[in-house]
Every structure is written in C-alpha cells, then in structure tokens.
Image (tube, rainbow, N blue to C red):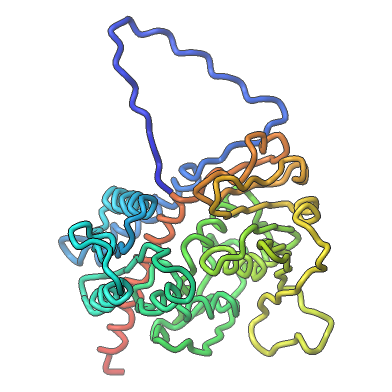
Length: 392
C-alpha cells in the first residue's frame, strides 16, 4: 500500500512547451485512482477534526498507536504510509516496535507475548484512541487471537469479534454502551431516508465499526456508481453481481458479507471453492430467521469456474497476494468494473479494454477509513463516559 512519487530533475536548458496531452484510447475504460475517491473523505475527516473535542486548545488531539512486530519491508512501508497520512491530517501517530521489528533485540521467540502486552498496555492508556497491529505476524489462529485482544473501543481496523458479529448479522447501529467484549443482541430498526448522505442511525445509537479495507472498497464502489442512491439503505447494491477473489478472513469474507447485506449477489472465489453470498431469502423454511435479514452462504456446483463467475459479474474485486496471479481480461464481462486490492496487480495490463472502470489500488482509502473509525471510536468513548457520569 505504499506510494511512490518521482521528483522532476532540474534542467539547465530553457523550459520547453508542455507536451500535448495524449487523448484516451477509444473504447478504453476509465482509470480511477484511490486519490480521486479520497478527496471528499479527507474533507470529511478534516471537518470532524475541526470540532472542539479534537482541538488542541479545547480538547485533545486524537492519537493512533501502531504496533509492528515483523521485520517485513511491506509492513514497515505501510506503517510509514500511515504515519504520513495521519500527520497530514493532524492526528498523532506513534509506532511501537515489538519482537522481530526491534533490530537491537533480534528475532526473539515468543513474539506474540510481546505483541499481546503491547496491545493490553495501549488498551489501558487513556491518551490512546486507536490501535492498529500490522498483520500478518504468525498467520492463522494466532493472529486471530491477537485481534481479539484489542479493545473494541480502540479497534480502528474493525477486526474484533463484536464488529464482525455485527457485520455478518447486518447489525448497522448499536448503542455505544454495548461496546463490551461480548457481542450484544441489540438489533435496532433503521429508519429509511434515501436522501441522506449517511445511513441514518436511530436515536440513542451509533454506527457499528466496519473492517477498514472492506469498507474502503464499498466507498470506492459508491463513488463509481455501483450503489444505487435511489434505493433504500441496506439494499443499494441490489441487482449487481460481484465477484470477490480470495476469501480471507480479513478482507475477502467480510467484504462478501458486507456486499451481500447491501443487496448484491456475491460470488466468492477461493483456491478450492466458489460460494455465493446473498441476502435474498431461500424458499426453504430452514433458512428463515427472526433476526435482521443478512447474508446466507450457498456452495456452488463443483464444476462452476472462475470464468463462469466473471462472465456474469458487473464488478470484479481481486485481493490475491501473489505477483503472478492475473485475472484474464478475455474472461471479463464487457463494461464491468474492476478493483485491485492486492499489493500486486491482479489484472492483466489490458484490463481497461474490457472494463469500463478500473481502480488499481485502495490503500489510500483503507487508511482513510481507519482514520474515520479512529474518530468515531473517540466520540463513542466520550458518549459512554457522559452516560456513566450522568445522574439519570
């Protein structure tokens, strides 16, 4: 998710006239960089930071703590990118090195103990508003355990089981007082307002925190018009077929559930299977539920292929962490929208010959959603403290 810029080399020769801008290739899809989507979100973040509770004079500047326990270069680059982005907004950022990331100590065994202690310490610090851990550290269940060590009141990545429970069960609004280790069964009913720019929260509730990368992808899809603003909240992706390649627990699976809960038919492709996520209820009584309408997962036939999925998909999202993985352009539906989430490009160079819109990365938006989660969690903590101090 790191970015690079090239600095022009000064020339001693007279400045030449600027070259004419090359016209777009006829029939080629539009390239939409994350920075274009980020502009309006940055304005929203700056407006929030201008409020009194975040002011250096009348409140306290929000603080994000990053915990780095690996010596992998991409994790260090991501941490540096996060620092620069926070600094540009006026958010405090502190990177805490643990285990293998501490070059002076070497790669010591039992790194997870150090990471866990660093998380618990940050949980207890009143001056820390958000915690971000740079994964993977060990992978699998060991990393999942560490994700649950982060207090839901400081989990800017939205990976705590309470937030994932809310996501999978389509619980969009919660009372801030329910931000406890055990998920609450609070299922408020949302009001419908198709003119609102944000999903309106019923009185006494706040928006649940969503994982920052899946949320960033949704914001990108909203920007490019995949979501229909004329439809009700929670159904604005209805009618869209979306393929998500890679069913990881951090990005792929929660993203598929999030899109399905918004009404889309999602084809989730992984190395050994393809399944469908859909909110549309089954005719079978065994699938009915008295809880919020939320996604169900249905296995597709064993002979159903990625090519079959791409042929009918309006949107293709790929998050395969391998430089050699490429989605074949010839398999894409003409006019589809393609979004690359992986650090390496998962689409062939000629993807825009078929795609009407191509988004090459979402890293900048992921950081923006993390920052938005940070500010929201700070507000939620303030609300909780006010409720606890109230005599009524």
